Length: 110
Image (cartoon, rainbow, N blue to C red; front, side, top):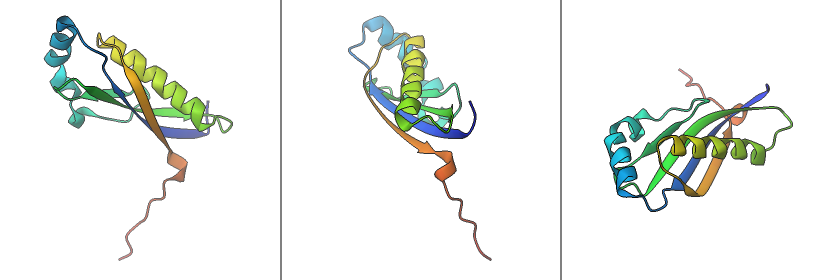
């Protein structure tokens, strides 16, 4: 795949957690606070100690032919895998993507 790259933010909720899941997530909460968030191809999960929901940030490379639904589908699959890797599940995913090629960098004129 080559051509485009998207930054995608996936937000979701944790379904009701059992005591073990809550304890495991809380034990690792410092590793997953917002200050650890990065846009990488592997993605990063962040959540607050309330354990109501999470945010997943990732970079998704795409072909010119790939549309936003394909990109968001890939990002959401990565998010689900990452959250399950933490021992929890997720629901109510909402995603937004930005084509990095559409971002204009405005330089200061001195």
